[in-house]
Length: 243
Image: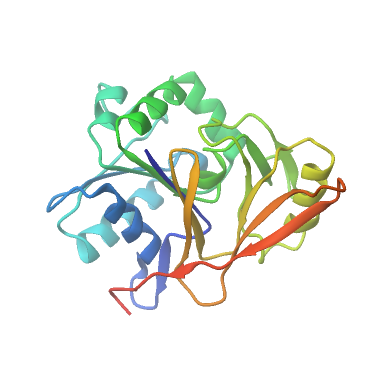
């Protein structure tokens, strides 16, 4: 029962635009799937943007031709006949970023919360970036409702914590997240700088990982005096097979 919740995924590539980064590689490795891992991408948070899926298949075919890559689109209708069978047949499900509020609404319309929970219990690695990190938690901070960050509190709650991505790159994230935890709007939780990820087995944190130096993860919780306490978690730097 593994979840990898991150603020990263692809790495930039000057020639091709994007390549499979160490965090995606780590999600695949966590599946221990052998020679032909099955990895499915969900870009619901981007409205199933066709360009996002094209980038996925191009990067996978170039960097990981051993992977049996697929995707699940829900717009304008599901692209597979049996959503449950398709997702339970994967080794890794990777969820892209975008609007977590829209993602959660569409997932609920198609019964995905129950299916994803079943997949998780069956050993499928659940992973993703940004909205694809926040969705596994109780809630967090999001720009789904407009340019000003707001709380979202109706996540899937497979992990009984709050979460916020992009902790170092979006200035409003840190103060809002700490305020929401301090006010009790969100439970204690975890944040990730760009390039960092959190590996949970069950609901226990195993380790923080990163695809670049200096990226950190953070524990945010109430101290004994009722004030918010932020504690840095130094990640393990993941190797990059493509430099």
